[in-house]
Image 1 (cartoon, rainbow over the protein chains, first blue to last red):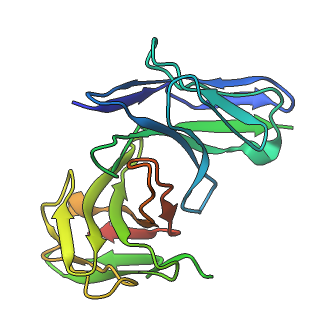
Image 2 (cartoon, rainbow over the protein chains, first blue to last red):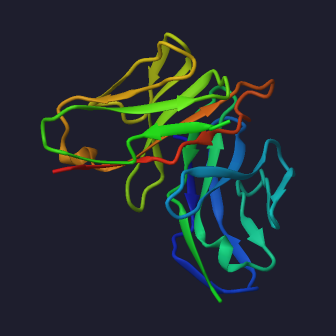
Length: 112
Length: 116
């Protein structure tokens, strides 16, 4: 079935370090891909998305490129801040449905 | 706009009790969803609705019921609460776009439920 696999956390980084959170997917169709972020005590909010192969989503210094050949959508940021500490969820949505399938989430902790 | 609102924020239930989790959105979104989030797990879809009067099961619907009498409201009903329903519940909404499957979902702040 359709699924999303993302790297397990927690990921602990120092401020200004480079961030990569890996995400790979399995889908029968041609999905749209998303990264959602959940700050402590809050609901999820969209961070970025990409809807076709080779698209790059970007927001708040975060980037992810839709790689169809490797079925991946890795999240990157060049210099993390303490305020980026949150749980990051990779997700997919198929064209035949508007339902999201989530990965298990990766906790990022950024230390000053 | 308040966006997606959920009440209550936190609730403790005894086994066998029932309750309704409220969800409302003021963005005139057609689609609404209920998810549960268990520790170390992603969100699992419980029920969803594509419009008033239309609901359908998601991945984990057992033990829950929903109704959608208006565009704005999408309550989730728990009958005979069980410890396995201890979780954080999120409501979300989205608006259909031309690109099917590309819609951004907007989430409420969540309801934390503890069943003892």
